[in-house]
Length: 409
Ligand SMILES: Cc1ncc(COP(=O)(O)O)c(C=O)c1O
Image (cartoon, rainbow, N blue to C red; front, side, top):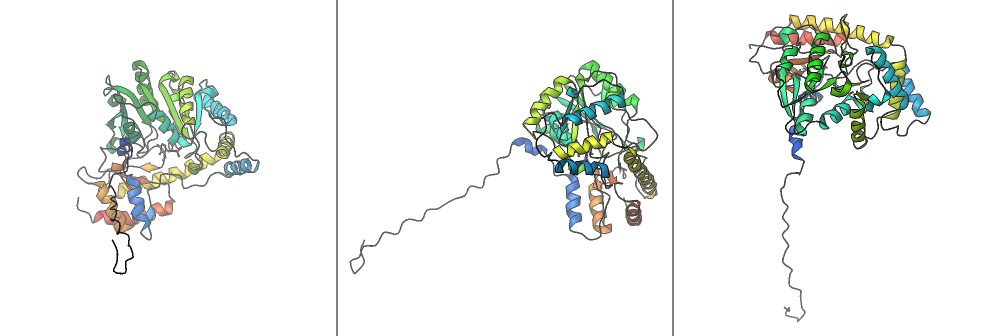
C-alpha cells in the first residue's frame, strides 16, 4: 500500500487478542479438608474493634521462666545456631528420656524419642504418615482443631465420639470401644482436652489403651497440657499404661508447661521402629527443630520446677473464678474443668453458638470461640479461655452476664 506521495506504509498489524483464562489455582484436592478456623474468624473481627477483652487465647499469657529464656539466649551467644541431629539435640533427647522414664517408671531409650517443631509438627507427622483411605480414626468431639483436617487431608475417615458438658466432657471408654469396627485404625486422645479442659482418669486411659493394644489399633495421645492439672489428682499418660509402645504415640511439647509456645519445641515418643520412620519424614518436612530453643528445653526440664507450680496456682485461681462466673451466666451450663486453661460451657441445645459469639463480640467486646471450631456435635458451646488475668476475666463477665440476661433463646 502507498500514500499519495508515494511512500509505502506498513499495513497496520492485526491486533493480537490476549485472553486470560480464569482457572482456579491448582491446589491439591486435599486442601479442601482444611476449614477456615473459627478462631481466626473471631480474632480477625476483634482486630478491627476497640476495647476488646480476649477470652479466646489458646496459648499461655504468663511469661517464660527466666532461666529458660536465659538458656536460649546463652545458646545463641555461644554460637549454637546450626542444625542439630535430625532426631533432636542429644542433650534434650537424654533429658526427655530421663524425665519420662522417671515420671512414668518406664524404661525408655533416646531412640524412642523424636524432637519436632512443637506438638503441631509431631501430630502432623504422626497423623499424615498413617491416615489413608479405608482407615478410620476415632476422634473425641470436641477436640483440638488440627486432628480431623490432618486425617482427612490424607484420605482417612474421622468418626467423632461426642462428650457433653453435663458430665464435665468426660470420655466414657465404652463410647470408644463400642465404636471400634474392622475399619478402625486409630484413636486420638487429648487429656487435658482443648477445648473442654477435661482430664481423663487412669481408668479411662487404661481401658482404651488396653483394648486398642489387644485389637492392634494405634493410639495417638496429645499430652501438651499434661502439667496443667488443676486438682489434686495424678496425671495419667498413655505411657503410664503397661502396654508396649508399638501401638502408642505420645505427643507433647514445652509450649504450655513453660510458656514456650513461640519457641516451637515438641516431641513424639513411640517404639524405636516408629521413631525411625517418623525421623525420615521429619527430615523431609522441617529437618530439625529450633536449636537454641532445644537448649532452653533442656534448661526447662532440668531446672527448678517451682515455676510450673506457680503457674498452676495462677491457672487454678482463674479456673475457679471462671467456673463461678459461668455458673452465674444465664443460659450457660458449665462444669469444673480439671486441667488446661479452657472451659467449654453449653448454651441451650437449639442455640447457634457461632451467632452468639459473633453478636457478643460486636455488642460487648468480649471475644470467645464458638464450639463449631472444635467438632460437629458442639454447635451450641463456647470456648472460654482463662489464659487472661483475673481482672480481665471479671471485667469480661461484667459485660457478658447482663448481655446474656437480655437474650431470648
Ligand atoms: C491440644 C493441643 N495440642 C497441640 C497444640 C499445639 O502445640 P505446640 O505449640 O506444641 O505446637 C495445642 C495448642 O494450642 C493444643 O491445644
